[in-house]
Amino acid sequence: MKTIAVLLSGFAAASALLAAEGAVPPGSGSAIRPPCCAAIAPDAPLTARSLYQLDAIWTNDAGRVSKLATLRGRPVVIAMFFASCEYACPILVSDLQRLRSALPEAVRERAQIVLVSFDTVRDTPAALLAFRERMTLDAGWTLLRGPEAAVQDLAMLLGVKYKQDARGQFAHSNLFTVLNAEGEIVHQHAGLQGDISEAAAAVMRPAKSASPSP
Amino acid sequence: MARCFIPVGWQQAGHLALVGFALLATLATTRAGPATQAGMTAIPAGTYRPLIRSQDEPAEISVAPFWLDIRPVTNAEYLAFVQAHPRWRRSQVSPLFADSGYLSDWAGDLELGPSAPVGAPVVRVSWFAARAYARAIDKRLPTIAEWERAAAAGFTQSEGAKEPGFPAQVLAWFTQPTPQPLPAAGSGRPNYFGARDLLTLVWEWVDDFNTAMVTGESRGDSGLDRNLFCGAGAAGIRDPSDFAGFMRAGFRSSVRASYSVPNLGFRCAQSP
Image (cartoon, rainbow over all chains, first blue to last red; front, top):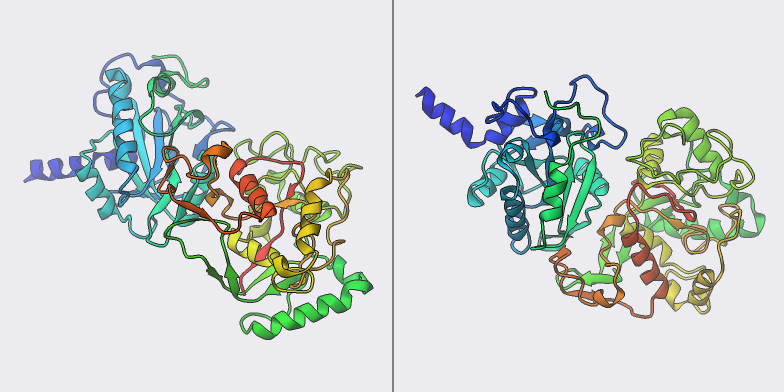
């Protein structure tokens, strides 16, 4: 019975990540962390350009709440989307899958791909979970929804344009953003099906403030 | 405490009767909310016709009645705000929320100086800063629909486009270089709704400016770049002769929320 419960909870493992702040993530047993993912002192103040200054509360597809700052200390690729998107979002997700597979394994294990929904009404945790299943996204992906003001703030900071049309679909920029371990924007990639090598290189670069690998 | 108003316009006797008349006319159609709001003018319920819209979008969007500041926020008012809210001072603001040009025309952190006269509209403020100012006094920034609804009025008619000479006056603004320092906010002629300086003083932030999706490449805009914007493939243009409208749409799509621009200020709105 217990194993079933474990399996079930592993299903929405991204939530575990958000909850387990400071916990050892799976696969990080290797002694040396890649430079992008060097430890950040937990008490160090956020840098001036850190997006983690946003204190909005987000909810993931397991219904767990957290701030973006819980992602601190790992490289993050963040994009905005909505689960009922028919045209571009599946392509955006496949671009991000491509980016993820271009990363060395040690980096891939630490990196998180974060998808934040525009659709504050329809994208409930259940709808996000259904999207996760449909796109077969593993624990390396975090799916978030939040209050409208938080979505607007994040979109403004990322430079994402979006607009809901009469059918409830969102026209939006196809853009993903690489954040370093401090939550600072280090790279942005606009458009679909482009060359993701620069973005992959950006994910692997260390944050300036990060301490050297232990 | 900072406030969005100081009814400068009302002190100008020459315009008083006109403003009063417009206010009476608009209030007559506005049932909800307080009867008056210092420094603000009531914009009655109406419609906004988007300049650029997608195929599914209705030609007219209804706009609920709202209050709009009669004129843009001034340097003096913004100074009072940063005095009360140190995190929005030039020396303390986070680079995430305002770029390095923020309030750079001020003489100091809490000093306006010759380039930023007391009564001139505050400019070089980011969207984040403008919104923080509005929130601090329980107001908000107007939406594109609200702002355009208010600015579509002429001086004497509710539809400026049909008022003889009005479109030409608006266009004339684009031919003039921005005066330095800027003239006082509220010195312009009030429009039909009693709002001043909407079209001929500075650009103004709107709450949802990031819904304007014009790409940087002018040749691409007829069909909007499908790879950059999801679902924006079939945009239509309402009125190809609305030059000022195109300029505003282009301007909105070219700025980011942390930008500080020399002739970009704001005014506040409030729901009744």
